[in-house]
Amino acid sequence: MKTILVDDMLLDMQLFELKCADMPDFDIVGKFTDPREALDFALHNVVDFALLDIDMPGMNGMELAMSIRTFWPSVIIVFVTAHPRYAVEALRMKADYVVFKPFDRNDIADVLERAKLLQNRQKKRVCFFTFGGFEMLVDNRPVHFRSAKAKELMALCVYKEGRSVSIYDIIECLWEGSDCKNTDNTGYRRTIKELRDTLGDYNVEDIFVRERGNCRIRRELVSCDYYDFWEGKKDAVARFDGTFMSEYAWAEGAIYQMCEKKKAF
Image 1 (tube, rainbow, N blue to C red):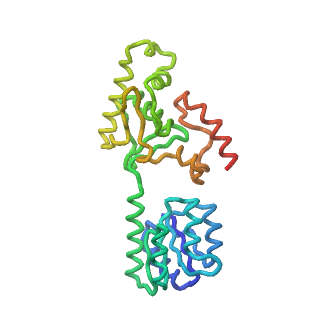
Image 2 (image 1 turned 180 degrees about the horizontal axis):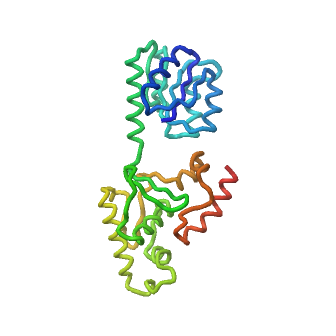
Image 3 (image 1 turned 120 degrees about the horizontal axis):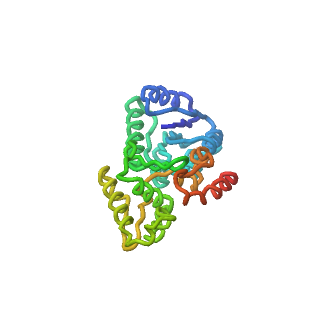
């Protein structure tokens, strides 16, 4: 977990730093006594967890937290303060936790354990990778599809970003130039079943919705580098190298738009 510590009291920051060093889940990527320097760092680097003093000169911790969250919406924010009066305001701005000074090593350990739990809850079981070839992971394990067509159907649903995909769109993309277009759609129905069976193998059937004449994925239940790219997340933008779902000709149209968008970021 990429962590920054921001506190104008060096001793307090050093105590957290020592405890983080004992816990491999935390990678301290920045330590700051000046909140503006911390904000500048967050603009250009991934931040998963921010431990922020509230009462600091120039910019207080709550102002800093709101600014960081404009770039990293899922960042875990824990405030440190010697003033209990700040607690209500901190929780109103959706802080994940507040710890009060003076604190001891047990307090620090509690904060870090809570941060780990929060990050685990944020993680989604299903993850799609689209830069280069298309891959699907469940619980960090690659998914083995029942057929190549089932995998391609999954890719097409990901490409549509949660919008409904009609039977006609599916046949047009998956069987372009094939006689299947002129059949009774047996291939389409078989592919739908193979995809649903594959998702059942991994106990993630809930990400896929079959409706009358169309299907879709539930975007809110998955993570995807393609979605992160269009949301402007810096790590996804940096990883895009001009290739996208390279196995599928129907995906080529997105590459120009993505290249143009990357130039604009």
